[in-house]
Image (cartoon, rainbow, N blue to C red):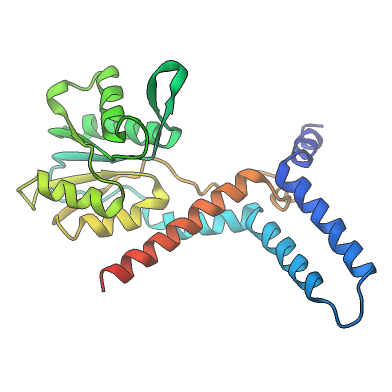
Length: 253
């Protein structure tokens, strides 16, 4: 009964509905196609295949696994971790409340960062990111860190960096000791690129992923292969990360 309920919910997903409509459109085009005019049919077929492929769990999970597989085991810590840097994952303004709030991604990273600060006894928690909200990501995360008990003297803010490369550049300006132990806190899918950038400036970088997009599936085979919005969203994030990684490699040539 629960499986039936899950399938019924899946049928109401916007991506699934769009997929069904496109499929019917494809059938209609096929039945009413004219000779030597199959171009619309080809484009529609490609669109349906692409939408379906990017919206199912096996594809989304494979992409996430490719980015995160190196970080499923505890990191090798060769020396004390003295600095924990939390990379911003977004903040947003809520005008009726006259305030800026951390996104779910930033919240997960910040909470993990505080946990790592306590675990390793680090001297500083650095909240990094400028973002596009009215208040910088770093400042919003620092405010939340103070609320959950991080001592004010341990909190540092980078409110200037806009991306992964700039996070590393700004930390390089803040820390004179390039042999200091630096713990990077970000999402698992974003860790490979982040680690590579920080290692350009620091000799002891410890990856401390805050979350993972890859999941060991517990769903039935039917649900795995139904196109869903959440999986399309996950796939888009993974593809964007792959593109970002390639772009950073090109920049470093």
